[in-house]
Image (cartoon, rainbow over all chains, first blue to last red; front, top):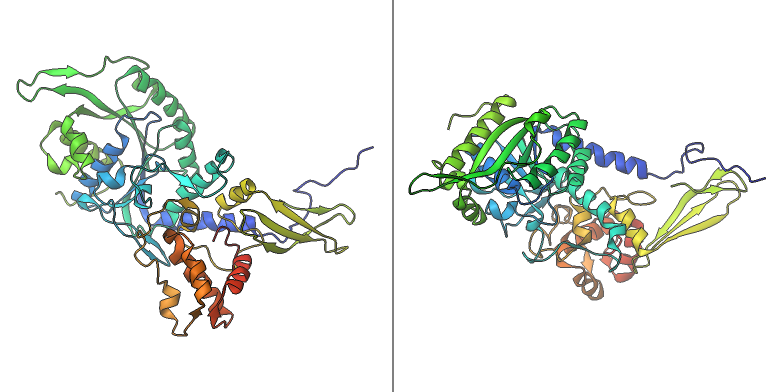
Length: 299
Length: 152
């Protein structure tokens, strides 16, 4: 007859403090985020739909309206926000309260993995065994993301924008750290492939019962600057996300200057404020402010 | 994780932690009933898995440093990213002089510059708390084990 060994929960404490250490991490994260008025997540599930460019431009336009904005690039493997907001190469003061984030174009405070890496084209690598890093790297990346949220001295913010990496799993991971964001912007393009992936993400965030979900459809059409003729970039296909109950908050037309300007660290909304795409981002900012009851200085 | 002494049916208590410096970890547990000791030896994968949680088996003797996990595990970190990398707050705020032996400084130089400032501050704080006047490699070994500074 096999002997019965008491289970983990049946035996008393082991004098080990790991549960307390994990609780302390959670507490530190909660305290840090308590100073943030609203957390807005910018996600998609699909890559290449313009999440980071939208985040950078939204950060710039909200900052220009007098709000205290933080922008966190949670895409550890493909960071871009530091470049888009012009803070690549910035040094970070490391105080006891945390790392002081640099201020980017427009006035938003920015943190991105790109700030910490030596070579801009280097893939993200961790110190450890050279093979089979999948065994531990996911845990390390989640821990790093936790630190980017909790160990940055963001100061008092009206809004913290969090740009999420492609992959529905990345959205789920972020929501475990930030379970109740004030709003989530789901970014898609009209392409069938993008809509199918975003539909998956929508299902995930619906199950998480988020308070506000707004659909942002990006790169919908291009208008000829000479004759004004409008050309749809994609044939609208795939599942209708609105039919699934998500409200469309914004449509952003394609403008080749947006990518160029943003890549140069000069947010498009500041460089070309009258362009239709900039106006669309401005309208999205207004919608966001209204949803979150944020008052701006009217600038 | 708990270790149960099957002879006494008691949970074994944490006794000590050793970090050999080869990416592995040795943690000793002792049965409060019969005194039997056992060592848990982790391979480098398991060590990194624990590190990724941002916890120290056996507890912390210094509070978690800001961005400690990223700074201690990122490969290819930007050497000049931290503005106060070489002069920590505790070091600046404490007038008592702490000397570093030449061999200790050599060893410190081998720590990636990205994380060196934080490591130097942690070692210095640990030494000052114990009234140590000079840091040597031997004392660094002791501190590393005591503090659980894997890979530092």
